[in-house]
Length: 147
Image (cartoon, rainbow, N blue to C red; front, side, top):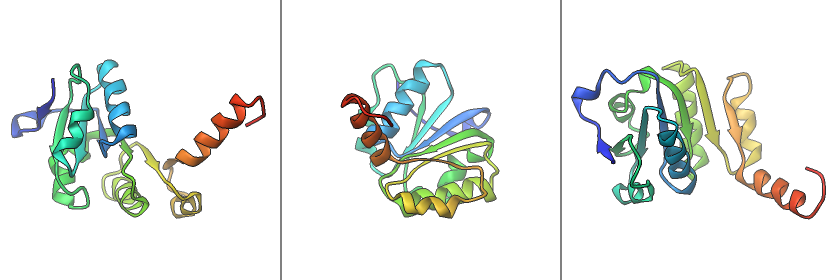
C-alpha cells in the first residue's frame, strides 16, 4: 500500500531513503519493503511510483530531489541509509555529497553510469555501483569466464 508522506510521519526513524523510482530504485524499494524496512521513495515523476508493487508498504514523495527542502520533507536527517539511483550522474553525485557533508547519513549508495566519476567520491565513504560493470561481469560469468 503506497502512502504519501505527511507531517504526522515525522517520527519515522532509521529509514531507508531511495532516490529515483526507475527499474533499479523501484526494485530496491520493493525488496526493502519485503524486509519490513521503513522506506521513503522520492521521484520527480508521480507515475514512476506505479513500478512499486501492490505490497509496497513505504512512503512516496514527489518532487525535484535537488531541492534541499524536498530532502528535508523526505526526512533525510534521520535516514540510516540512502540509495541514489537516478539515471543522471550529476544529480546522483550532488545528492551523495549533500547526504554525506550536510546530513552525515551513515550508509550511502550511489549509482553511476560513468566509472570515471568515482574519483569524485574519493575519501567520502560512499559506495558506488556501476550498471555497466555489473552487466559486463554477469555476462562474463554466464560465458564461463572470470569476473
